[in-house]
Image 1 (cartoon, rainbow, N blue to C red):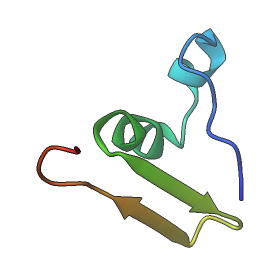
Image 2 (tube, one colour):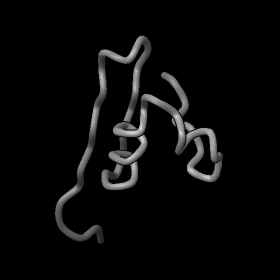
Image 3 (cartoon, helix red, strand yellow):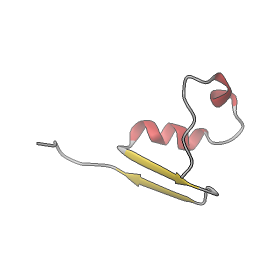
Length: 50
């Protein structure tokens, strides 16, 4: 799996690609981006955990 870039890196925000994955990672509980980039697995948990 490929590591997601850091939001604190200015080059990340100015990159010409990959921002969609980066933004999605902020909204979901888990996001896996697998090389070469044609598989993305997203997990969203509903309800409260005990």
